[in-house]
Image 1 (cartoon, rainbow, N blue to C red):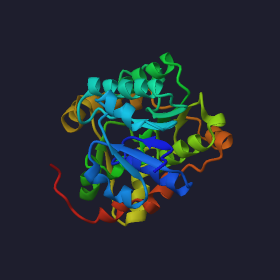
Image 2: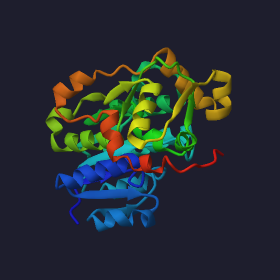
Image 3: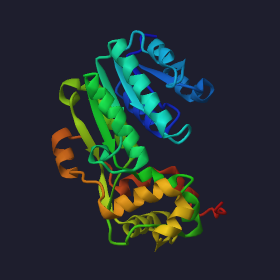
Image 4: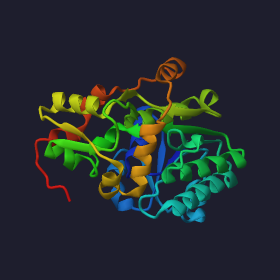
Length: 292
């Protein structure tokens, strides 16, 4: 298969979204994964599957043979912060060595603003390495995922009818649908002249948590209340790193320009209500699950 674009993180949300949009646009995709057995669905979509690990630079370089475009996403949640940086640097250096013509890297919103949030700082270090190697790249900086409401660390609380977060009820938070990350990444590969060199803060809407929960309640029919946590309580519920993140959301916050995004790129960005219409987890809200 003459694959054109290598995509990492393919069994996760972002990589999956990128592949969906690339396939929709008629592009050929090579999927890079540690777990080929989990990618059978992609194989049925016509995606070429290659086994490898971002911790192994040689396996990345091998997967890049014959490839000129690469989507890269890394995560600290399995192996830790230092491992995420190592994975990113391995991938970026392999991209340089093999002559990649366009790298799209999914970083995080405000990575460049010295947030002090550990998993923001790791992505900033990978960004810096991309610039150091002078790679032709597009940096996507997605803000808080709308999809987080359906994640295991939030959904059980919604099913119980209340969400507690350490943010004021009037403090807005910029959010983005993961599907929009896929749309922008695909657009970047299809129009490199417009996207190479861009650093794009991706957001679809800014909402307070009570506003978001009101919309979830209306669409699902399940009433969900908002409770503001104090930081000492948040440490016990979310752990230290996420508490640092929420404290930064409260004191500083993302700074996207959503209207400029729409004007400059003309790629639709989902509002939270639009996202919820297609979110499969909304149907699970009537299920009552114990919070572990």
